[in-house]
Length: 290
Image 1 (cartoon, rainbow, N blue to C red):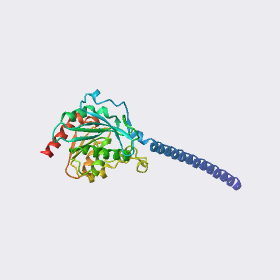
Image 2: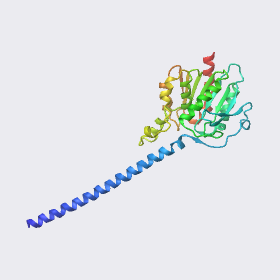
Image 3: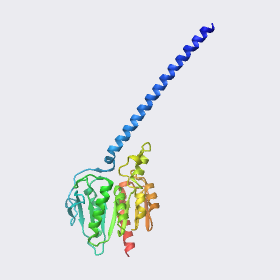
């Protein structure tokens, strides 16, 4: 009887061990599948990330097709030989500034024609480059390339001797801030719906990825803005679904004085201009130059 009980116990133990081994194999398989999926997802994001950051679309119209008389189209060779398109017009009013306009990540330069018309109607000059890789320009966009190009554009615009307003729109806020940090003679930095850093936005959207290690274009505006000497004007909307308004508030905290933060209640990412942005810029400019 004792031998039968012992044999039964041995069989039960063996069965339990086999079940345990199957469970461990299954668990290992699950871990391997999850790990492979994670690595594949991380690799996909790494190799395709610039397709999410830079989204050039559409054909580039001419200024005349958009009713922008007096705006010339220039083809400018950057330091590395890449040719980019610039829309340019001199100020109509004596002593008026030139707006170096650095656009957002989507569409193309000609999609901003209504903004440019308002700038020109105010008697201001315009210098609006098309980023490399976007309609009208060669090359491929990257943080380093866009900033290097923008510094060259700033120097070309400043050659005329007019005051310079750096205006960054969305993606362009990081570029404009980088330029202002390197060009202390800039007269005003306007940031329309800015971010603290592209890597911060990526971390918020993909908290399960090590974006700090994967990001090719981190664009740390929060670090660069501390070096800016020009007055800073930040505008953001509370209903911004692309770059949360908290980014604008936090960036304002990093900016040195003089600075001003304008929060527009219920306004979305692309609607700041339609809700008084340019009128505020005019007010700030007139206030500092009077």
